[in-house]
Image 1 (cartoon, rainbow, N blue to C red):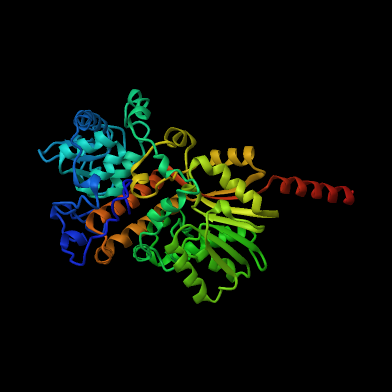
Image 2 (image 1 turned 30 degrees about the vertical axis):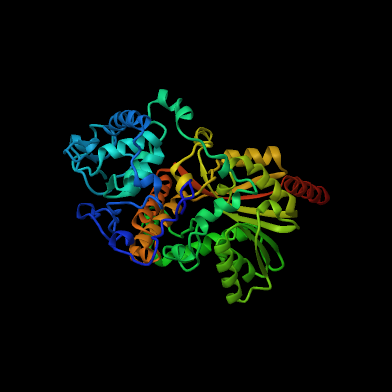
Length: 498
């Protein structure tokens, strides 16, 4: 993982790894009662060559002034939240300060202040270094919230539970007058990270080329890095286990292939290869697959898996931008790739699909989505996720997808399946698996700061799906003319019967 400066990967340099580097030195006060693992603590001195924004606390005049303001805003905001925010001097803020118990995982909604039932438990956020926390928050807003966790300025007994509280109220935490000024103060996405054909390869590489071994440490045997679709529903869904994840991933893929009409002889275009599981399952149906990716690591492993399965003649995997694809395909499938396109290029993405889709063909995509008002408020923002996880990414809304395809293409959305609650549980399983293998991740050279970063990413994302701030959809599209032609054919049959 590189920072925006391109300065490091989070891998330890050299061959000697002490406990701080591997992430196994822990503060006993942070042993987690809410989750089945211990959160690694960063070393006392963080390597500035790898983590320049984490190693030093912002100290400019702007950061100091903004830090004082951010501290006041944060303290005012959390006083009414279903949290226990603990400071080193013994101060406790949040609803827990007025009667609730401060441990365990509480529902993100909570009762109104003063209405909490006796014995209500609240997730705990422990501020270890108040001045550093406030300075980072003032200097970078939500970027600072993530960076301060990476640095160890604060911890949580259950990070997802804490992030759920914030995610459920993300639009109201900051007073409305200050929200209107955010565009003047907070950073915008750098032009160098816009997903032009020149930049996209670099953006994708910064995430997906980290290491196949890293992703294998927390993904299941299918190496599928997107939401699964479990057979369970309701309360049972919250208790799904690791043993069912691979099957649920294949179920998700099979549903997309079914909706795209993939069968013997189908010509399939896959935009975004992943590590090859969809291509394998399409080939097993007798389809021929042309898959494109911009990750050399993914391409290498996906090709290996395809060859080992005996489908090398049916599956072609190329390192190519989706905009450069030529040919004609009966089905186009794309799983959680649109988020990496950038909102400036969503029209290009769908126009490319329309251009290569054969008459009568179908499109099935899986996309993480966000409410349209939040998209419009944040689409040019530069966030912690952009800086550390997905440079150049923007999550679309369903409305944006429908409006773009209707106004700028001949494609039409025909069907949608929302499955955000399934993503929350997929992320829970990844989080538990990743933390259970912390020693292995450390041995790969990914230090404690990286592990805290990755944990924050997984919990931050899961909180979005748990609260409904994020959703994930399977969306089926086809040519607008397909429906009208079908309608004419049906009318003709009725007329003949009459």
